[in-house]
Image (cartoon, rainbow, N blue to C red; front, side, top):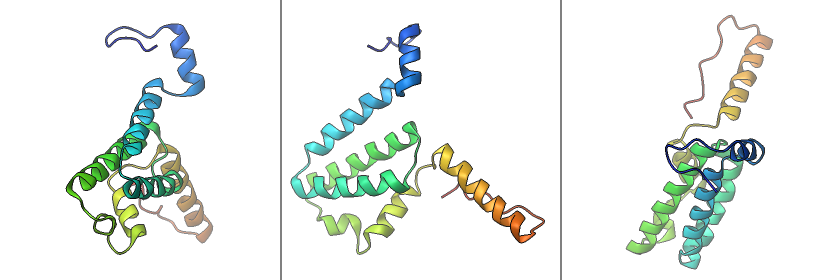
Length: 138
């Protein structure tokens, strides 16, 4: 249903993607979920738990998020192949692991904009003359 590379998308596909989001991103998501489903049970459970966490606190945009999830699948596929214990992948603090993992990916545009808006509003309310530094590098 997608146009071949180099061919323009039909008007129908263009409007459909406006309404539903990128069809390519949906395809990537289905491929990611299929990869996770193939993992051994304990790795799958760990990935799904981390996935839930990332859904709430990770990048919000499609492309950035999909790259992160694909890298997550790569990491756990390799860990399963090597027989790496789950604790060795996560370390002692799963939250610290998740935060360090997310730090490698840009925040979604919406969250970055809202963080900037929030910090600027607090600075104005506090009477600060200089705006706070940009925190989108997290």
